[in-house]
Length: 166
Image 1: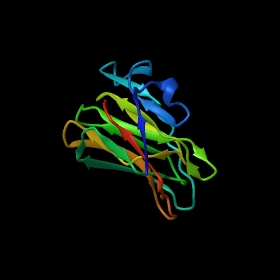
Image 2: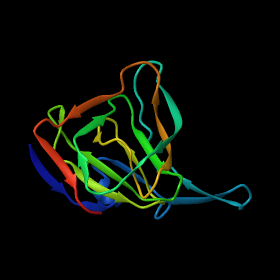
Image 3: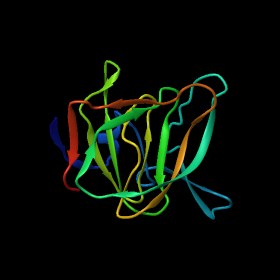
């Protein structure tokens, strides 16, 4: 078994664009609503769902925390809809994604997300399940419900990708 070390880069809109959207208020379209008492940060992520009887789900996930070294042995993707993660606990979390290479994930990229940033994985983007850092944390999740199999998993058989430090 071969181990490949991944470097976790800071999450930016430009760096994450091939995989989906960064969800944060910085640089977003802000509109005052409700008689000027509320700031609305408009259209932060493209929610993309497909398939018969598809519907948008809003969930809360509670993720146990990880600490380096973190071994990445598998990735998953959702062919029928995007999936957004936004931290509710204000703690950082780690995102690991990969481009598709012929129906399999390519070499993963890791991003360190701050507690005020979220991500929206584009439909069919390979990603690791939730990786909370520091302590157990809650996340608001927006994804696809309805009929159809919206989960594919890939286990790396011959390589482990390791995040040694953050």
